[in-house]
Length: 106
Image: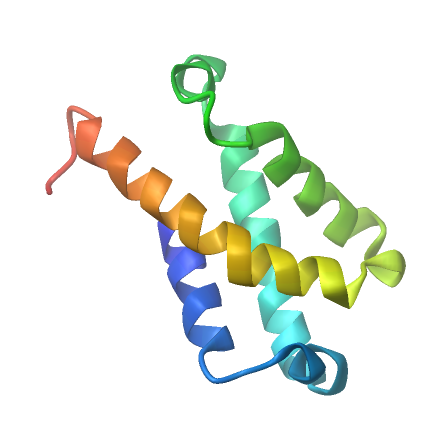
């Protein structure tokens, strides 16, 4: 999930919302990383998710489902909002979670 967040931040560096409309490769890469984040969130244990209720796990998983199953109806504005506003926050939350894990190497 952290790697996918980093990829999204990198993909969008210097880009704007119009780039998501006009650049098919960009939107494909961005939506793929959203899928990865949602799939990984879904694979986490319920216990871990419950320990971190500040992370919007249900919305993350729901976004993944929308991107995969409703790809023709995904709104560029929604993707832009998620990538520019939610992903940086999620990244920080993930770093904090990982740092608390017993096997964390940070």
